[in-house]
Length: 346
Image (tube, rainbow, N blue to C red; front, side, top):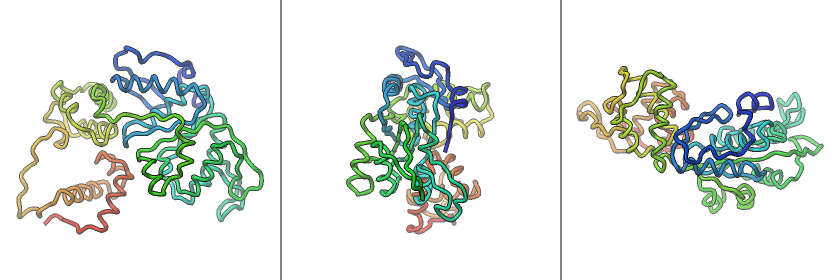
């Protein structure tokens, strides 16, 4: 959860943050900062996307950002606030999938003293914290149905009660939401309310996956490598291999691959031989039957995940970062493995 108020926002955002512009038209790759997150704008799809964001930001409409995990949805949400008329007001974000269901409502709407055990003082919710600014709800599809109902009423402008409260609260907040799941399918499955979907999506912005904007791969890889060591660079051959890879984990996976490559390689120029096998397509060492059991594809994945978890001491977020997947994907796979036989090393 991040809360950026007037002072902090003004420090991180340029003076022209509220001014719409055409800086993405016919321009080479460039770096732009949105509330502390850096964006590399190189490809035509991303330039067009940012032109749309600038246009959308000047309205007060609720925005729904869709796209695959790791594609950059939070960055786009921050850009909406950056270019909006609310840019000097608070930016507040919440990952709806990171908190247990029973805590989401109190985080969003706050609670009064004595509302439940441990509520020793009154706490304003995130809607109040974001007053006159922007509230970003990431992984909106993870909200439970009960909270969806209350959120819908607030988005319709209806005052609400804090938990345990008797006095209604009215707020002026712009909501930007994001999801990597198909909400229309979730509606059909009874997991998401159709009326909330329609209220959240008067404007939808789709962030293209990295494989649809290969022109961004080279500049992004160079940027991530420079953050690790500005003296090093990728060879053209290595960049070509990176461009040909499909990047199922998108920008997040690319960043992790660059980090691992920079750590494991000692050369100043990083070539094809320095890239991980899953990216370069290098043939893996032959498997010796008496050293390792026969693996199915699922079993090999299971073994790899358990091995990385062991290396990180069971830290799921660190393991997910190394594997180039989201923590939620890792958790889902671990739940699946509970019902699968373990194919362990002999």
